[in-house]
Length: 62
Image 1 (tube, rainbow, N blue to C red):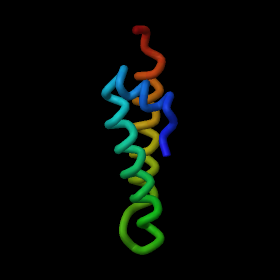
Image 2 (cartoon, rainbow, N blue to C red; image 1 turned 180 degrees about the horizontal axis):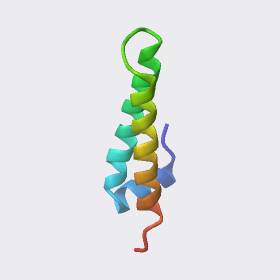
Image 3 (cartoon, rainbow, N blue to C red; image 1 turned 90 degrees about the horizontal axis):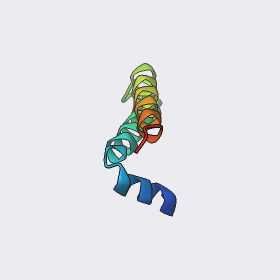
Image 4 (cartoon, rainbow, N blue to C red; image 1 turned 180 degrees about the vertical axis):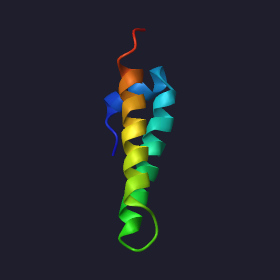
């Protein structure tokens, strides 16, 4: 469940929706590895990459 603050941030910075979905896909790849569908390395790369992108979006001035 997303907090009200996160939903407000998503309205102000629409790119955060992509960050949220990228993190979810990364998590699915990691969890999927345990049922022989997915990759832990690829999932971690996705999660770290989208996490850094989200961090940069939240630290922009504006």
